[in-house]
Length: 327
Ligand SMILES: *[C@@H]1O[C@H](CO)[C@@H](O)[C@H](O)[C@H]1NC(C)=O
Ligand SMILES: *[C@@H]1O[C@H](CO)[C@@H](O)[C@H](O)[C@H]1NC(C)=O
Ligand SMILES: *[C@@H]1O[C@H](CO)[C@@H](O)[C@H](O)[C@H]1NC(C)=O
Ligand SMILES: *[C@@H]1O[C@H](CO)[C@@H](O)[C@H](O)[C@H]1NC(C)=O
Image (cartoon, rainbow, N blue to C red; front, side):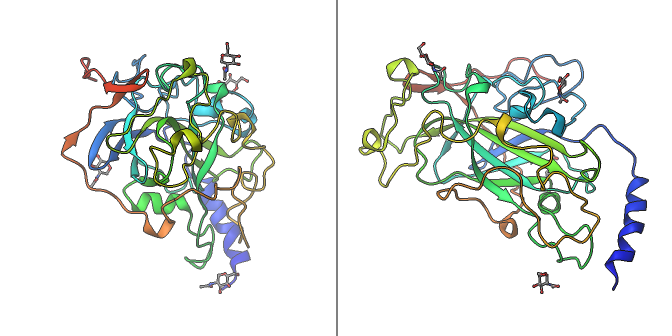
């Protein structure tokens, strides 16, 4: 088969696709069979669902952040985002099911996840009042197209195709030795269908507050020293963790405004040509990360239980007030 002759016809078909402005957002999360509210971008809503663990933003069109804004704070956690007030409680080693509210098949590209610690960033409420520009990110999942020639042609099979096959969801592995404390998970899809045009890639970053609970019966002071930290070190964690703890000290990792460049080969390319490889944008995945491989991605059944997220108060967490205003 002659791929070079196939490509122009696909390109032609592709150019007939309507330019839709409604893409997606994180609708909810499932952690240990429990459901946590995501972001609800319904028009007219000015605040997030009170107990949502996904950061609110103003992308009510479910839109994206373009490469021309890779140095703008919108790339951190989406357009005009601000911290969610609640945190989803997780245990190190959990797999978090992230449910997107659908995903268009044409929007092919990589799926990536990053973690930033809020410990040591001068807050006493975990990530709820964190300065987003102070967050520094470590990549924990880097899902490539995986199988460029799996389908024997262009544009090949991408991580987004696997996400769609899993009912538009993605499993993110939380490393089993991650130090307890508050974290922001930055989960992102980059759609590459227009990446052959100037400023054509589309980033869909979304942030989720997590509180990694210490092992049962242990207490970790995540805000000692007025939250200035770093209070979590391998030494201070030795009584709590059984192995060498993974500690993300303040400043470790990369600011989101430094993750990508508009001319990165992974965001400036033509996916309708036969690719011999793909360079995923951003930093490499941390050696201690435990991503769920593309081939092990699967959908998790809808849970029956709705969870109560937590609020971080000093050295402890308390149940987040139950939502009063329904959508
Ligand atoms: C991109 O940057 C401009 C300002 O330079 C801003 O007006 C716009 O809202 C930004 N965000 C997105 C998501 O494009
Ligand atoms: C698939 O995802 C939708 C949200 O996009 C959700 O409403 C539905 O329950 C999910 N189906 C299953 C089987 O989990
Ligand atoms: C936290 O506050 C201290 C004292 O005001 C300041 O020196 C430090 O730069 C702050 N750190 C961050 C990450 O904001
Ligand atoms: C896919 O591409 C790789 C690298 O070019 C090649 O080694 C492999 O044989 C190809 N697989 C198929 C099924 O064509």
